[in-house]
Image (cartoon, rainbow, N blue to C red; front, side, top):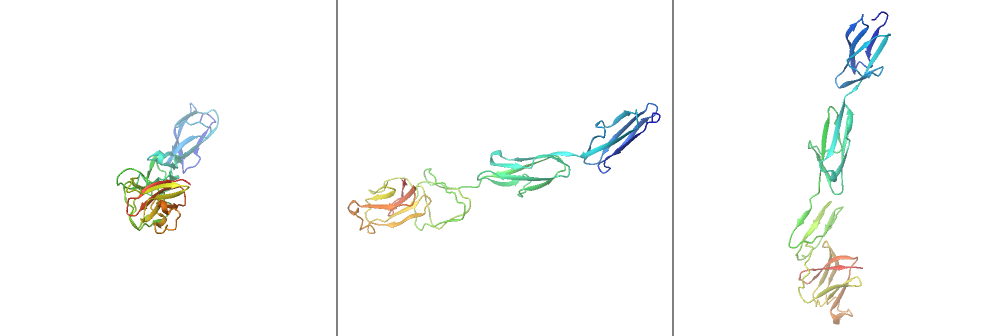
Length: 277
């Protein structure tokens, strides 16, 4: 073309795309040509940096141009159904055919439930063939609640299997809330959260880090911690007959730590007391 000038166009990789001449005007020394991407590829540029496609060029010298192609890119969006419940990873821009690892990480006590396609595999693998959005669903573990009367509660976090064995019944007036991570087995009836009502003339108070029961007579006295475990074996006036406080009808009961305890005298409703050591 144009006297002694010639042009040659080609593809950097024929698997990704090809080139073709659309028109040539030898008298004017002009050629028009284009790059044709293969499926799932796109044209990037010619070897001289020009990005026109198709392209017209007036020759002033011998010219050779190479077309470069690259795979199509797509957006992958990985989101959480509630941002505060968990985090996700894997979002980004990917080439066609790329493999994406989508991961979901629950916050706090929440746990991963499923993806929007109902798959429960986490992390999951995606093959990119177009713009994609996937949602991770998180949920809160259920909390069993037994409502009796008023609203007081005790939070018990159980990180392993725990057995609570109480072989008597503690009378109920309030509410027990148990936040459960694993399993709690209750072998008998356990009621926690006791209304502080004087059932008879006995007095219960704390002194020097101990629970003091006054005027219980010969009735047995039992102490339980806040989740119903017996913190002290049955104590009766007969068992305390050698106590120097016998004349005052006092029973002093040691407890292992500071905290809330339930004191049951005979068959009367249990009473709650806070002990500070």
